[in-house]
Length: 537
Image 1 (cartoon, helix red, strand yellow):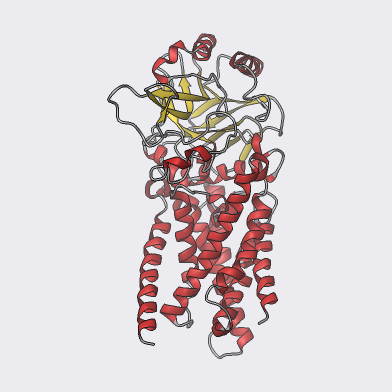
Image 2: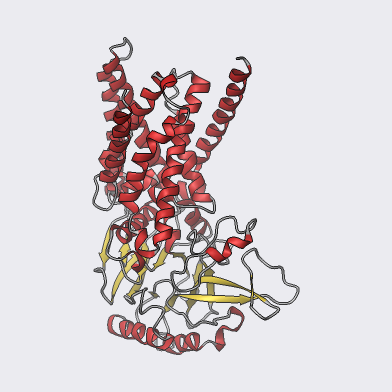
């Protein structure tokens, strides 16, 4: 096959993935999106002596670049360098998965089958992408169904990796049928294989619709007011004084709320006071203002984002993210923080723990501390931030309910969020900015991914975005009420708390862990076989 045809096959996979992706794509295309890539790799395998050893990687790269560039170009709006790096690296990683898949097929299976290695390798990659310091799981395949919650109610058992596996199984069945048809070889009847593929697609959709219509939320109402301040992150959010920011917030609360509201939810990074040290919170002008204001609402709690700092005391163990104060002899940590305040208990804090690579955390900082100075400045606190090691929900004594604070990027990490649920969270508050990406698919994709978490955990979600999409999501993943883009407003709704632990919340990404183990075994077998083959020459 001509090299130009291989590039076209790769590009076709990329374009199909783009056409399938939220928020305007149709996810049914995912079930055929990898067919061109599979045929591309097969063509290289058939005439392996014609191509270089890195041919699968090189020919897969154009398709992966197309997918990443067309579906995540909006990163460029927040950081040009970061956007280019994210798109390039993710494309390289994905193409490398195809290369590894090809090598395992070659060394272990001698190109006689072994196609099932692709979903195993891809899920291992996705799991890595959720759990290392270069994490960027935005394009994990299972996320592609976020706008179609009626198809994936069974995510409460499998998480998004169930979706990834589903997509690849259908692709492989169709590939097997087409390969048999094109080759003319005797074997399984292609029509039977196509019928099996249709069944594998249809049965989960049918069962999901049954689950969707059968699911009923237990009545345990919480009256929530979500605030969308709509401060421009490029001008207002970090330029307005804390007093001005809070004054705007108070106006929205007074206009849209009353004393019957149970929780007020605001976005991340609302309070930018400059020296908000956690050991001296009550000395903060903003904190005192909030406490005084909330005394008007004795039954109400508030969750609000802030940039905070912790000064290390003499002799206290320093973290890898601790910073030395210039011209001083003491260290501090910086955090992306959420405050929980009510009129009964002490202030509770949560620090964002899944940090945005390159902005809030520099990868490998534990081993390469000098790269800290390369962090991108997107306002607020930059450089490598401190994190919380425990997923501890906020507890409301008055209503006897626990809620999970989820800050921005954390909302795309299912297994991570399940830690809050196992620790008692009965509802989820997502607090984000989303204004960095401007009016692009970025903020809409981000909002849609929260619907996956609602299904996985069977938790109602209140989502507050500085601007973007603030909304309420029920336990079936339906968006009940949402704000327009770029509007200073607030929305109010009653959601239900839920204390049932789903199978996925209890067990996390177990499908991915099986895939990782299988992949490592096959990779070792491939390496060993490769060594034996070379030594035998």
